[in-house]
Length: 305
Image (cartoon, rainbow, N blue to C red; front, side):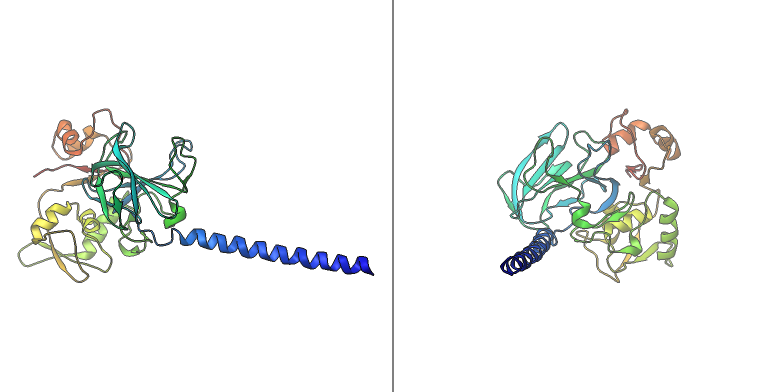
């Protein structure tokens, strides 16, 4: 009888321990997720590469976008490194209070220095094509712990922001960067851009194309629809910055297309012939080298006027 009593106590204790462990692990997982659940996405653009590609060596996500567009810190923190690297190019590292460290590579310019405190959504640099890069983009890494040379603590940024697809547009300063589905196009398919342009743009009495801003749209996203630059849109509409609001009407600049989205199989020589420009012009305008590969969905400036 005593043995049965002891056995019952042991069984109850074991069950209580299992329940406690389940509760603790669930609470720990929730706490872990809550540490990154308010982060914002670092840049406007479109996804060009994912975590784990290139034989597992690619430890971040690549976001193609407009050269010189702003790059933001995903959360508050302290700049742990800000320097030029032969691989990362101009790069900024930010350590966050929750123990994570984020990396922003291939920048055109750095706007912060080592030891500087930054807030969530603060501009830390401009998107570029420096270091070991084949086109304007942001290489973004997340490390659950300190960055190391072998990137031992690297995690997939999709674990923070949700999974995206190659060519999908993403939007800065949002925790869900894919949330605006009506303009989250696969930019590898130019026919999608043309159909959206036809649906959204209408011609005014003076021959200009007008675009009414929909909720969630950005100036960069609209520029991709019509194949113009944000600077052209700002100049045409007298805008002091890239801020726009829902319902606002924009005049779309007319003239030759200034941006080309690379399609599979295209070459710099072929694109140069298509727009009646020289290969050397394309190299200079896009800050690329003659032997650099170009990739589908990469954005190339084809008209500097």
